[in-house]
Length: 251
Image 1 (cartoon, helix red, strand yellow):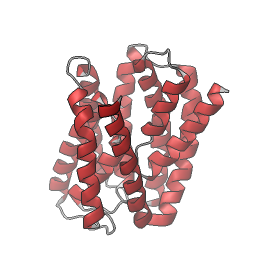
Image 2: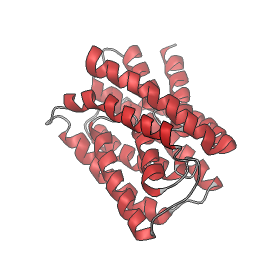
Image 3: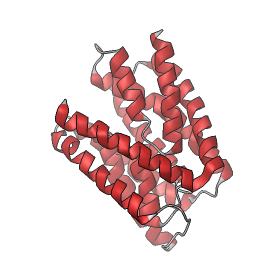
């Protein structure tokens, strides 16, 4: 029964993550609710393995239907991979409480910008290839480091990097954000896996469910386009604001 519940949570997380990012806010609470005695690191590691399948699968589907700027994505993936591993390695040495308390206000600022500026509805890349690569790589490194240390909303942050920083619309920002997120997830999985912090059997089951959810979510996103994705981002970021405020100030 517990595996059925976690499978359903992983499927829903895959849908949410494929559409806009933020599937971890569904999957991580479900793991903590079902396995309260497990070490947090074990639950985070298991979540990363499950999320990787859905993120990679939805990225692949986006890549089949949209033009993918690999010249920008590949160096950004490398930057996110290295930065995420560093973030995971140093997380036990620096206090994350300040980040937990600041995060809802950072998300609120991003939400306000998205609501009032109508960004992401038109695909108008505005930089040369070299400058776009520099912006994407730098941003991916910062977000990858954040993913290694903390993580909630990484997919949404990556999508906003391409929308706000490079002038992409939400749909065309989907594939880059997914593949960069794959790189940061792989790095974190390496760290958690070497430390023995993954329940591999459960992770495999949740990965299958997350993958299926990611396929459904990416089909929905491609079908309804950037206008739908903008609304989805507003809904998901609003939920993240409430969740991170609760975690930072009320727990």
